[in-house]
Image 1 (tube, helix red, strand yellow):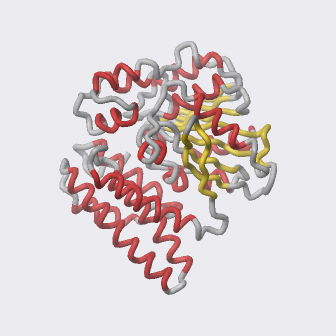
Image 2 (cartoon, rainbow, N blue to C red):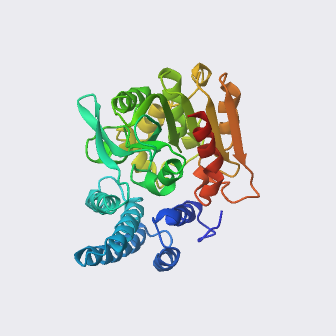
Length: 366
């Protein structure tokens, strides 16, 4: 991975992450570099200020374009502004009033831009307990009765981000996408106060039940996929919800508590983790995470399963991928992006083309 700040992995990773979104309009290379140059390393207010400022500037371009009925121009600016707001909000603490304000700015910009796409997604609400899980339904260009993938995020991603990182790749292969903010994610957490849970099959079943009611979906060709922390969630869902036909693990997690075992209590994402799992202290969060594992669970998966992982993944060590793969008893595939290639990092953030084999596999399986 290219490091904008050689001395800081996490901040450099986030820059690479948004640069990777440039293929489908989530960023513009020079804009990102100029914003990053103005950021003072280690100053979280500086991080927020620069990405939020850039988002506001691009949003103004979008609003000007829409006023002049320049639809195509407005679309690309709205979508880009949304991703900049997402990045600006990223490190804000849950109690910071700017967090929800910036999140909502990003949602509004994304939905305005997405509505101008040739085949705009449908904003959806999946019934879940006494509330709902928000998300988007991108219908397959094949029309009705088509294959679809239900996708959950990870600790810090949102359903909106899935457009920039994978929706077009699936759609051009004829596969629809149901992008969901599950418990502890995106709008489910920020707006509906739904925290994460280890038994994620409850959310997986809710999404599946919603999907099979849609005429655009073939109920016999629905896959489950998730990335980052969601590598645990997708596997857990596949183990306990056998109606899913395939499982895509986009960065494997065998035991999520192990990922936090060596992280300091003041890790940049510690307060976000506490918010995600709904506790007050980091020790309580660590205790909650002891249930987020696949011991005795991966073996229950029956559907074909594909694992994609980077050899230099510093969030989830590559050993997680090997452990999940070795535990599987179903038809299985393992793709480790080697360290000499770009895309060898977490979720292939710096080179999305390394994820193409996963999407090709989904196409062939569904």
